[in-house]
Length: 253
Image (cartoon, rainbow, N blue to C red; front, side):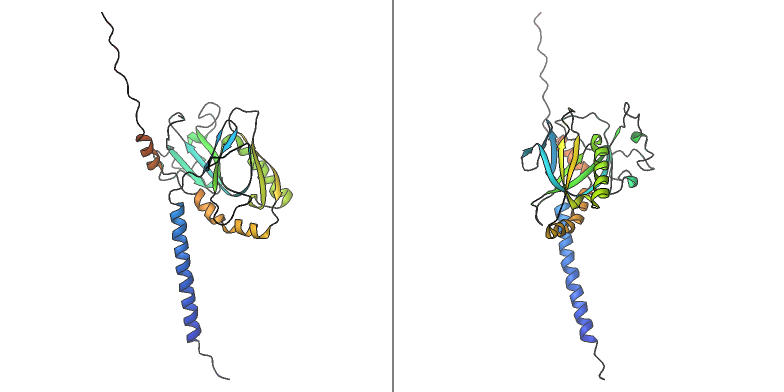
């Protein structure tokens, strides 16, 4: 029986692998550029309504939560609506137990992780915490496609308990992660501030749509773990025109 020559097969395999690697390199570079400086993709809350990046204002959302991460943010200055102020210290991680201040924080508050930080203890600001514990989500509409941009929801601390209870009930009752269902999100009308309610999970049954969501989870994670550009935020704030003080009017003698 003749012995097969392996050389051509090996050459084909090497060529094929090189081509695949080159293709993935280009894809990753494209992904890096798309995630380099995210902006204009956040949903804001105003008067108990959702203000979408495209300008739409909605009373509620029916969306797929593709992924979420934990974020802690500490500000030494008081909040001002018309001022874009970067956090003094911040941390981002897929798991809340792994949160530790970023080395890029302008004024890092702890060297031992967020759990032991004095700003992250109850009582550090009134009865609450000086550090704001949040969850940030990347969501897509139910008619999304491979190129549909993510919208980002910064879930306030007042909504974290409700979210955790909802996610646990979906996993326990439907045996699905959050990206396996359509989630209804609305505002709690009994509060003046933004408090989100997550409810009415509807299982996704379109295999092609689920596959598309799965394929975009890495992109969603990369977006969510992208740190805030504190230098750009500060520069934008400094570039705003300062109000000119008028000279005091001299009184007549």
